[in-house]
Length: 589
Image 1 (cartoon, rainbow, N blue to C red):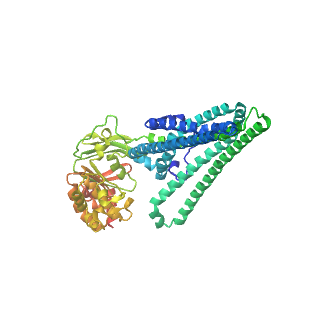
Image 2: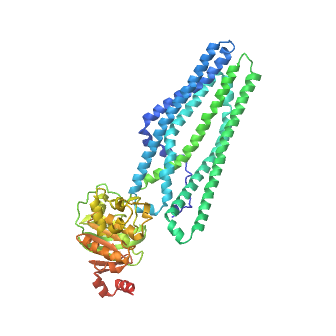
Image 3: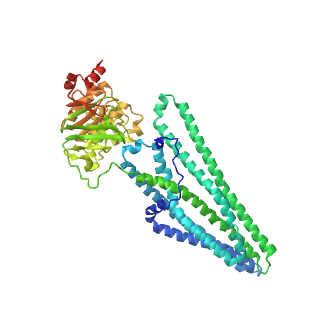
């Protein structure tokens, strides 16, 4: 799929969809009182700042010509007060909106993270993790500012334009019309730049997403890179992606840098027109020096909110696209979820039945077809067969990591699709091929599935799986810190820790998918003694390529051709001299 490629751009070019913006109101509604208070402060700050030119006009037209020094000091103090009020209110507003913005980031990111944990394996199979991360981190940061400061800023800038226009017309109507005459020219220039600028910044976002995805992939796969000496090739790919990002960034910045000079030039032309009209065309009786000073001050301020609105509009366009990606993730169906009337499974015995089960990862391409078998509580079942035949798929379906295409699976006679996931999985111990180790202590990793476990229980579980010895030899024993994915542990040590984690959860059904693949033969023999004791009274499903480890299982099922082709004990299958016999004898050679 194209979306699973790090070098395929996400399509962010979307129309301005108010539906996404309206949907985001639920995040703003929670903080509406703070936002309204911040808006009121902003209005007072804006009005306070706009009194300055009028005070200047009065001083130039009346106070200075009449030589009223005391009044001049008073007006100077008043001017300082308006400036101080504007700065203080603006600062308080900024602090309030910073808190609101961070609270919104927390809310959106929490919703995203909670939903991501509920999404099925198939969602992560289809997407690079780097492109998921950029939505949770970068996109959320971008839209939070739009939802908090952006909304208030749009209202404030529109009010600013209204306030400035009113103040200008109070000072002088004719000169105000000169200022407004520059608006069409400004709109023509700015909208010409903004259309290209918006597309350029969307391209920056795409290239950033691609670079992030490739970087994350290579950090995870660093060992494989060095094993196959791919450093130069990977560096070349990274250089290509990084260059594309740099070029897209420079292109976007070049458009952004055109906005202010264009605005400044138009503002300068308008102020020049005010001076030309006021000093050379209009009579001194109709326009005073104070009027010209006040109008030039308002003219300078008039363009700032207009330019801010154009920037905000541009940001809205980009952030609506980001918002769409966030909602796209939140709307991704948690297909593996509790049904509407799902009930708790209750404490189970461990009877498992597959009834005419059919399953496909991709529609129309079945991995399993019409698979049926029954397992009694306490039985140990081994699955063997060629790679890709569906062994891991079968054990994944028991835990309902995927939903069936047809048929049903029951535990103790209850359809697992009708029970809650928590009540199902909490009674299952599952050890997958990938022994994932989280950052933290070894003890934390072992108690990951059972947080209330005492240290004695952790040590006992480790002892049973023969992990206790190597853990005690480490620098701080069970309190030794390990990195994400257990980079400083051997493959066998990670598997033993994962084994202890699985066993500590005290499962009724145990699933071991290649659980001993990274463990040496001597440790495996010792581990087998502990497993024999542990498997008593538990239903267990075991996948192992080393067939010598499953000879003592109650039943062995050979998986091939989208189903179970053989089933029986080791002795029965060997006597048949079928697929299992061929596989076993080939390993014994």
